[in-house]
Image (cartoon, rainbow, N blue to C red; front, side, top):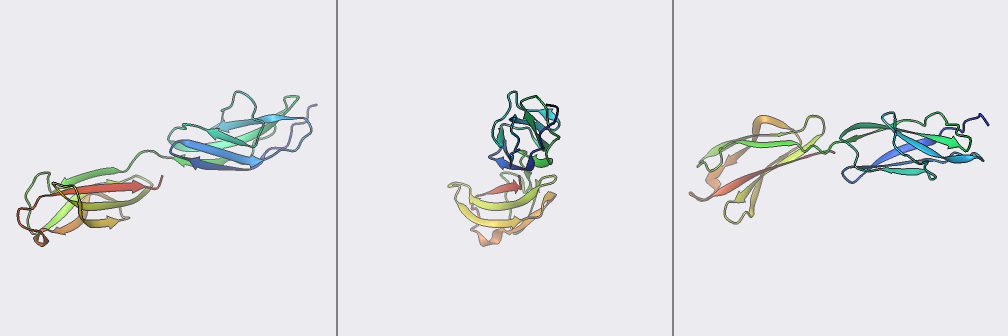
Length: 178
């Protein structure tokens, strides 16, 4: 037998959790079917042939990953590769930094809050909150935005709305899409 089986079709990739990728594809229908090989970025992943039509690639690295699957028959003939699928794994959180006002500073009036909430390619949003310095309870949300900022104005805070001498803490949180 020197005829290779047909290539698997309809390969799809799904991110599962933070660092795993699940692959699914359609079965190859050949009488002497032996199993499947899975490739990530051109390198074979599985030591033993996979009998089913799915594969879990666990603890994958950050980056854009390309997957393909082949079918093998009992004679060792390998099919051409399936359609390629790519998936992006990015566990790097956005950059978050409050630059002004300085920690422990006393402010009054309209205060421009300067900071960084940024991710290179997948920024989603940031939220700037005002907390009671003693209880850490939320006093108010000063700003929420889907626009990233690098050492830019995040919000204007009117401190005159609060009792003189009150102590607050600013909390900047940011999220990305991956």
